[in-house]
Amino acid sequence: MGKRFYSFNRYLREEFGERVHRLSLNAGFGCPNIDGTLSDKGCIFCNNKAFSYFAKDSPLPLEEQIIQAMAYAGKRFKAKKFIAYFQSFSGTYGNIDFLKRQYSSVRKFNDIVGIAISTRPDCMDEEKLDLIESFSKDYSVYIEYGLQTVNDKILKLINRNHTFNDFRKTVGLTARRKDIHIAAHVILGLPGETRDDMLETARQLTSMPLWGIKFHCLHVVGNTPLEEMYRNDEVKLISEDEYIDILISFLEIIPEEWVILRLVSDADRDLLTAPLWINEKQRILRKIEEELEKRKTHQGIKWGVEHRA
Ligand code: SF4
Image (cartoon, rainbow, N blue to C red; front, top):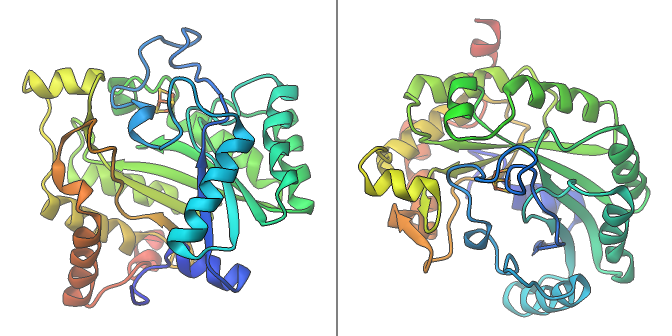
């Protein structure tokens, strides 16, 4: 994919000088939005089993997951270096000793060069940041915070149980640690959001000290409140053309040096209800590339303009 956006693969090659593959792991963390601490329902779209191979009810021991995932990625992608990605549920939710033990599993594997942790903005504090930062002596360290949208009304509607301000405060705390790369997760197509609402998320994020961003298209997976809403015709999903159009406009607004961790998410095909096009990932990526070319545009083209507005 040309130079019209700053892909994660390009970043990894620049940073490590070779292909580096992320290993999606389930380290047995929970989520306060599921276990009853904040709610027992979860975000309306959430079924972690749809996101990652190891997100099963009884996952393999962590080290076994790492061994299997490295073997698979080594064979399939010829990768020799890896980032351990603590993806499932909230990767900083738990007692500090448990977190330390789980993150430290990577030390047994010489080919792991980085640690990435995906979590909620309200599951972070100074003690956890101390722990995570301590890994930066030996590893590249990344934290991905789930935001989804800056619109608090929509955050409430999707049952996130945190606000944009929670995200803003946690990003501020994290940014004081100079060796932690901070990324945001954003969902395009949330119920009740207009195109302009989605682009407002882009505008608000540009003033924050982010390193990267990961995009998801809202999709419906089995056994979620969103599935029920979808079946009752209470939610309308955006089409692939709408998604690509909004995504490109979003890319235009954000700084060109932000790393794009993902342009479109896919899901376990047995759990995906709709839209089915998200699982035609290569075709969608080609279409995004063609559309960027057709519009003669690129990530960051409007950054200065929007920033000054
Ligand atoms: S915060 Fe993450 S793990 Fe928790 S319910 Fe929401 S999407 Fe699921």
